Length: 433
Image (cartoon, rainbow, N blue to C red; front, side, top):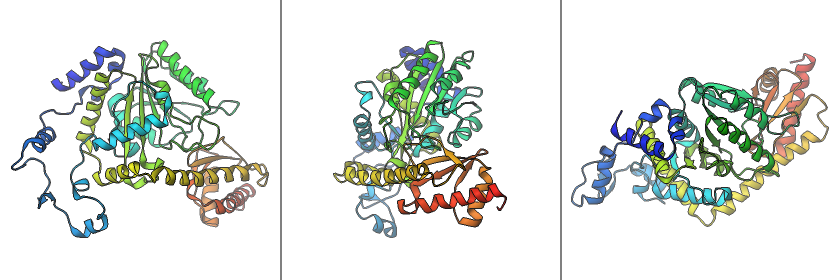
């Protein structure tokens, strides 16, 4: 093993041997070279006052070389903030500004020790880093039965982890924290588990309430006290889109420092929060360990980025940073939030109106982009009928669940949308499809 990787491992183990045990074989082996091209280039950038012949970009007249046909559409930005490589960990100022934003929006973090967020190529990349650093073949990844399908690719297919499922809702249509606890304790003999918490949930658009949040944390504490090392990942892709009386912040803060056998990891980003899906800017943050151990995890994360994508796109990081620093940012974001909340409330009003009879029920939703119908007929047949007869696209999940993204439908069109879904369900039910 490279001495740098060994040094990082020893740093973590000195602080918390359980956290060191959580690392995968790749997580133990990965590191960020101290004497590689990037570190030498960074040193040259500071000290090479005559010529800097290190980094692989082209320059002209003291600025990064560029084509005017591209720059003319980006004239508000200095070329140095667009064309140069961003550091593997992301623009330093962006990392700091995002951390400040996280602390302001999540008071439960308080004075707990967290790492500086590392910039990822959006959230899927952040989750893949988690899988690389912590998941080995046979490790348990615990998720509810209604979840984002990419988890299986990221953790199961790529890393060979075992996907362990529990019912999302309990008999009272609350978050099934008892099911989470049982799923965790079922892996007691393995001594390790990775838990993915995605609130608001894709696909059902549900965020637990405050009491449910405490129950989730208690379930994870119970597993840790039973001797299980738990990596808890809060996938906060839709963070902030809380439309009702639910948790208004990430569980990351409550999980930081919860137990010596619990490592809290927050994966979030501008993708959905700031409505910039194609910009591909996400973040990964660690919490609950000493500053030295958190720095070691940062270095392993940056080493993983260096070994895969090298670094994220510089222009989009610049765009996000400028937006976050703008005095117009918060008002504009609040305006979009009101639009999204209006759509969610309209959907709920329609579904509760009695207009659609008993051809479906719906899973509790209060946040995010989506809601999910539980149909009395085959969901795939309804999906196909909607496409062929009504020009409507939806997502069929399992035998009876149909996911509807109200996020991309104007509020004035929502009633027509659900009228069409209702007609398609009746067509399938009566055999007219």
